[in-house]
Length: 474
Image (cartoon, rainbow, N blue to C red):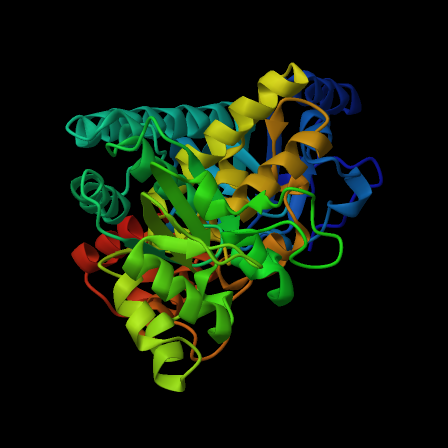
């Protein structure tokens, strides 16, 4: 068996360098190999590394003594050179990903034969990482451009205020269309959805698309007002109504919304005692200030929003049934970001563009970072995504936002990070999450070889590629 020369020269011995080769010829050949810009790797029939040139050591950041004699199959089992060693069929211009070094390479790989048998293989490699990364980014921008064009096309018939609401997924645009039809009416509208999905943005579009657009839009967060101050905040108070009351009194939010719209966010946090008074104000369109006796007639349109299940609260007795039907004439449910992943790229790019203007930079997302954004669960929805992009913009040393600038919780859990608490979401969502994770796991275990992954999963090619498209794993 051949031994490992101390000078790191090839171990194929008599197979490649005959015993009769002069030392000068051997040194000359090694100098030629080391001067070649492309990386060279030679393995024997047992996949042991026999030779690497200086370019290989530089590209992979490794020392010669730490690789010579090692079995390539142990630290790079998916390398394409193994296939050539096994089949004897050369590969030309083969682009693959080297997992141990996180590099994309283009390789020409040939078998080394003697007396009709394969005794090793040689690979000549070029580092294509930057080019592959650039192609991925170009593909991302191409998709983004197509998404934006689709967005413009799908919203052309909506009022301007709704066209300006960012988001082009079918489910979200359907909500906007319903809202646009309801906007000109005087019907009370309740916007439902998880925290951070953009309920306030839709409320603004409703106001500015209504006949009240010239009037005020008064916003109140019910969760932010202490219970003992809520009535005076909403309905105002007269002078001397309580200790510390302003001389001359103070108009409440409903008075300020005269001839306009009042938006009550987090309506589910309103205490029952206040719900009774709100119901009367909605029925009579009049209020009485705290400490006063004179009814004040008002003209306003009510829009509410909540991240709570009001129907369940009504059944539990924590939300009045009569108020529920009064505020919920038109119900709009905004889907969470994880159910409209095609919007993630659009939101992220817009936020980075805004941050770029703020910091005088031109930010862009790496393909890996974009992939991580698309696989994350986004429990905080659009608000969390905006926070994530601001963090990344501050931390990135250049203009390229990579996975290193994204929160650790996203990297540690992938698509399973920040999974919903049991019972909070529908069974369909949980099944889809499990299916996506199974596909991702199969792809990882098969080195991203799709044919092997679909065999491992036991599904048809058509079904497999439909699911790749569905879960944005392309």
